[in-house]
Length: 316
Image 1 (tube, helix red, strand yellow):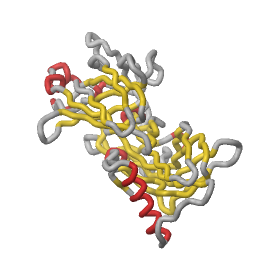
Image 2 (tube, rainbow, N blue to C red):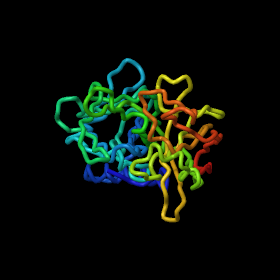
Image 3 (tube, rainbow, N blue to C red):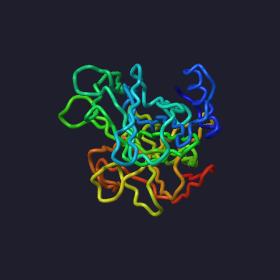
């Protein structure tokens, strides 16, 4: 199920509640005491080196705090989604108004059909049109980030699975691997970050070195870092400086402007732009010095504060 977040949480809960009501044959029912309703959606940040990322999801588990077992929500039929089609405006909702015990939860986990078995239940379509098997370690991905379900209330979270951070082609191995590179956004409290990138930064001749077939629309990305004053770094788990917590693709609109937009949890962030994201290999600590070959060169970072129900703007 997909829905838009444009009218914020009211639309999220109304749509999710309607779906549950239809499936049960009745109207929306308030959760019992000491329980709440939980909706969990999936979205993704686009990448430029593949055209499709198909993932077959078989269920979802959530782990209450304490020593008890996880709550399991297996799907009647596997859900196959193209991650690159999912945006905050077009999210895939994996749980819709599910009644669960109120309280603290330690993690949530997606169960997948994505093992290396020469069966393309999960797979990647490259920009050249080829199909490559997609594998995920242990056939599951766990988001180790706690969350709270409030009693007698509707709670909704959006999982932002950033394929730019998580999709890798391991050297010497066939196909692609998808790593757990996602964040969770509480849909009761979030803001928007958007902005415009000067065309001169996109068409700079230095940007052409990672572009495909001379297409200057390739590789334009805003990197978002936690906290003010961050150093702009590429995507690399082993780098000396923390990498981005999220990325946002810069795309040319019908008015000719190059713009980006994403949602973030309230807090302080740093943002930087690069037209060379096509050089960013998540398995390698890429150089950022323009004098070095294969460098991912960034603009200076700008600080921004995201407030609940507000839109912040950073232009480059």
